Image (cartoon, rainbow over all chains, first blue to last red):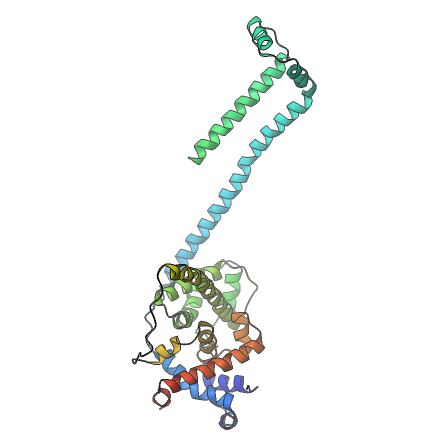
Length: 156
Length: 184
């Protein structure tokens, strides 16, 4: 089916010089003869007109530069996106720290919690929780809301 | 493979791979490789506008790749490999699209009585992979090993596929009665 010399026959046909010994061999070898017989076909095919045209090298170069710049912009954007996640992480850590540190007080106030008592304490100015804790909670809530608003506006 | 016109081609390739090629160097590389690449893709894909797109995409990818240093021959093979992969990607997505539309609108039957045949028409009757292999072997003059590298096949497979493709082409030429006309 195949002949190890077809590659050599084909190489000599395309690149030259033509080797008479190989040409003689091709006369008695079906696989190699096919290479030689098909050569004119491919010569015609390669010489036939081509509808396509290549763009100017400068245009391709400039397009490649633009693509490269866009890629760099995307890369920077991705880094910025990651950096913007850091404040969210910080706020989440603050919340977690606060809850962990004041867990016993929060738990105690939740166990005693009733709406009537809460409203009474609110009106009389008293509180079951220390004032510093309430300030910290309010501060964290403000920061969280501010960041959420910033994220929404940035998306828009 | 044909030799490019540029003298310092090898050095240019190294500079491109290192990402510090300037426009004049790129120009030399482009001028030596773009035309053969376009012929290959256009003949294999049978679509001129697609060929133009693929050739551009090949050079974009080539510029963006930070591959190892290559000599002139390897670079040329590398460009052909990128183009072949892009073609394969295109055929895969086109095949999916065709399968989808065939449910909606069946393809019209092919007219087998086509009489106006020339070398291009005959070549178009071959399977895409056969067209790739035959073009690389007979026009680009690639060895079996080089074809295997470009199309990511085994060398043994290339030998067999090439043999079958030649046989099919000969049969087609004989069937259409063009053998004598072409070989005259």
